Amino acid sequence: EVQLVESGGDLVKTGGSLRLSCLVSGLTFSNTWMSWVRQAPGKGLEWIGRIKSKSDGETTDYPAPVKGRFTISREDSKDTVYLQLDGLTAEDTAVYYCTTGGWTNFYWGQGTLVTVSS
Amino acid sequence: FMLAQPHSLSESPGKTITISCVRSSGSIASNFVQWYQQRPGSAPKTVIFNDEQRPFGVPDRFSGSIDSSSNSASLTISRLKTDDEATYYCQSYDDTNQIFGGGTKLTVL
Image (tube, rainbow over the protein chains, first blue to last red):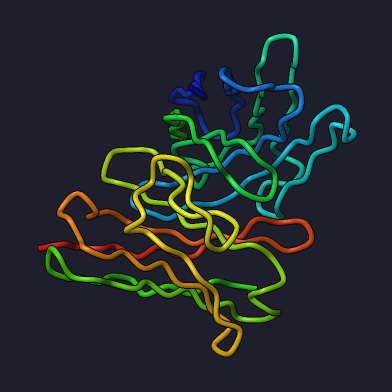
């Protein structure tokens, strides 16, 4: 069974930083592209970036709203993908999901809540 | 491009409903479309991928299709159950980004 477990969500002040983690099991993580998707309270889904596998260059892509503030990385030895959040604003308050895939999101974690408040 | 979905739909148990997802520019056939089901308080779950494929465990009451004439994708749920009540999101991608539709809240009553 494939499982994705996010952690690291917290209450953080405006301008602060946070690192989220996503531990993956049940598949060959090193071969898997990973994405992060967020959902603001009462809103829809928003893709916030992907990281390719090491064999595909381990490159990352981000949409304009988060480019330069968010950074995705991976540690294949730990079957874990990370999302570094910097320069947080109230608009970043959301549940953050990690997913498998770069162009699609086949498996989803349960999400972790990030709340940004002044 | 954007993906436009109806904000909400309702139907009775046992009936069939179709949720549309219209692509604003570029061909709907250019990139695969996925559909996700999100029940209240839960994470999304894939019900259709690659336009029409069902993950293992998703009942065949769920089907997906694309229509080039209307430049849209559709999710059809037959023999509706109260358990199908959820918000459904379509998703596709361009050269770099993933793009989500705004979601359709389905009420089954």
